[in-house]
Structure formats: structure tokens, C-alpha cells
Image (cartoon, rainbow, N blue to C red; front, side, top):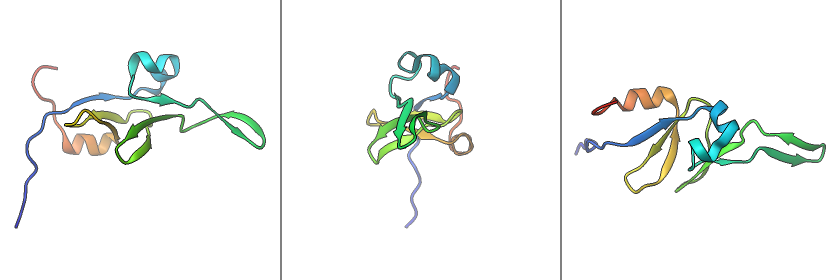
Length: 93
């Protein structure tokens, strides 16, 4: 048997690290910012500081990733290449 995805319209926003560094809660309330990490050498800024809690666990959000809201209200990140292969604009921009 073969199956085809049902057409589903999703909400999505492209993540901008610069905006997030200034005020992550204002622009991306679904993203958590762990700005620093404590190591044996001291405290340092984390490169992978932004993440989303998903159904599969915490997932890192990188600059220019898309944040998609799923059909059950959950959020997850998607790489830009995959997003553009999978989705197209719907309705008014």
C-alpha cells in the first residue's frame, strides 16, 4: 500500500539569533535561552544556547531555522533547506 500526507497548514516563524539574544521571550516565547554553561574552566557562553522542548526531548534551534507549530500545538525546529522543500506559502503573507 502507498500513503500520501494529508495537506496540513502550519504556523511557522524563522528564528533570528540576533533578535533572540536581545529578547528571546518577546520574539520566540516557545524558545528557552541557556546563555551560559558552567564548566571546570569556569562560565562560558554556549553556542547551542537556544532550544525548544519537543515531544522527542530538547532540540537546539540554530540561526535561520524555522520554528513550526504542529497540529497539536507543539513546536519543533526545522532546517531551512528542509522547510523550503516541504512547505510553500499559504494564503496572505
